Image (cartoon, helix red, strand yellow):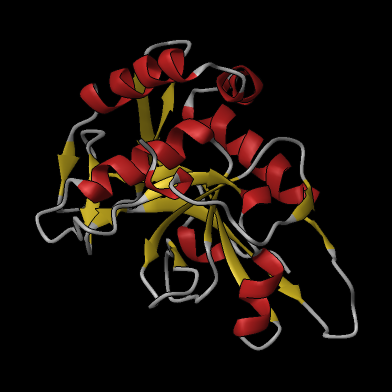
Length: 225
């Protein structure tokens, strides 16, 4: 069972994006009150790591939970972004929310996914939101250029149809999705050593394989404001 379905969320997020977004998180006990929900993060930003793919989010959580130093009492799980309190999390950070929007995984020259600091490394676009206490419940509008940029990246890596699979994967029943996830996990190879040349990879469920290639754009320029 997904550990995040053990009890309901008290906050929610309204957002605008061309497809559904996902968060990996884990719960930590907090006495007799509601538990603290810790989202996964990437890079130096304190904001949450947000996945544009349900499948990639679950791949991230599964491999993170397999790490030797994992927290068995508080495993990583996945939930839709609308079930996570993005506004409340941003307010706790002082009103500025720097997020990473993950659309692939960092790989080595052989296509093996690079695992570092207890989790697979991801390829992402940075996005920032400013929030004011005077606002009510905001609707987060994700930069449309970010998704167009990702689409071009998927075309460049050799996975042009990846975007069209998202709605189908989102609509899968649990059993069918579990089979697709198992296939992605079983066909992945892992490494703890990257290369000097940046490579990255995505899983294409239609092709039934991981697709990897050198990155045409360095990670440090993938920032949108």
